[in-house]
Length: 433
Ligand code: URA
Ligand code: CA
Image (tube, rainbow, N blue to C red; front, top):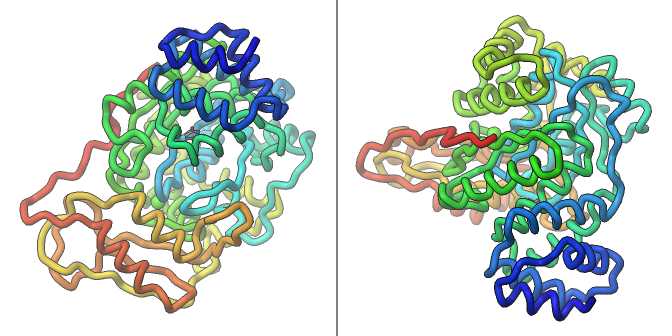
């Protein structure tokens, strides 16, 4: 078999066999296939797409390109959740203790990764002492005893995806449905989940800007899950503005705590209840999403969700008392308002731009080795549909550096202000399973 023949076959719009896909993925992982051939194939896939069988095959090949995690020692149905990338997306931090508090085992492998703000692990490290460097056996025991644990990701999970994703990033081939779907699903499957709930973002701040493309991505992932024997539900949710009000690490921990105790932002709370309900149903702890939702609402009201959060932080070395006394989380030195330049209604808050602004303040990593400042970030004061007067604050920057003029300009540009009244956007557009 020769890679050049595989490239030409895909270039001409034909379907690749499982053998051909395996030959490419294995060869690329080992370093036998050079980047230039892999990028030519990625571009051919970008233009010619893949059929359902090919998508399942490339997912499986990438899933088995490195370690796979065996969670069978953990009792019950393990349901994992994944978001296709949002800004200020605090849902994992909330959902993990929330669903665990109603009996869904949460065994999460989490990475740090690049991004506008840190990953879930970075955010949790805003709680003093909390750490994810635990052994596999301790991880299993914690989930069996407490219902919830988070462990740092193994270095060798889906190396094929790691390589291919970095290559796509610099060759204009990120935005391809078969490549995104297989990339995400290979990681979830390798991490050992029995069932998966996907939050597919749509809108200006998402990979998929149109609802149609978002639906196609959701359907592709649900189908891959089915082919590979894991039940998968995908929810399409709005990313025409950041979720909630906080974008930053300690800021999002604060927002997660508010939400778990029942006074979180409406959109964030609603999305967590929606995604959480599907997780509870997939874990077979409720028959319908209505029943599941009621269980989750009760767990918030009774304080069980908050208690689960504290128990989880304590079990992994964290000082959970900060969750009751949120002023003890890291705080930035300066808070600076960004104000509106005219009267009107907020019609859009370009999430990517807010994310980039947060990263410029130091909330995220520009490169793998950058240090994150847990205290900094952006607090939105207005959301889509809100009326605003000239001079009123749109957002507050939490900064440790005074040189932030370029950051405030970005935030102002991110806020689109219309002279006519605007409705707040739909939060959940569709569900596939
Ligand atoms: N997230 C991933 O993990 N992979 C992609 O290709 C896109 C988003
Ligand atoms: Ca948020």
